[in-house]
Length: 104
Image (cartoon, rainbow, N blue to C red):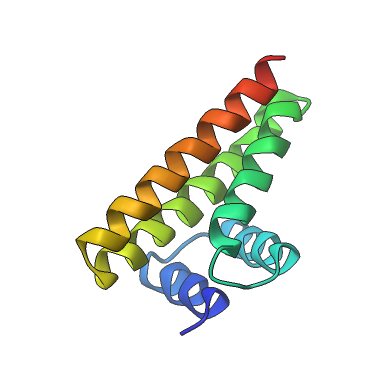
């Protein structure tokens, strides 16, 4: 199942609110629907949340980022502990870089 299919499954399984599911789909489509797209889409959501004005507009971005990162981790778990370790390291590094970028 590709990244878009996994987001569809996650949105369905979690009974995600329509606005969140729609935003996740759009963010993922913009990132290219590849394996790495879930993390890229999550990071794009986080970047938008950092610059969101008024601040309450950041909520949907944060929820979508959380859901996309969670799905990326769930996928890694299903592939085994080595994949989870690698994916977790990548996620932490990319989040750290994003926070450093935002703090500049």
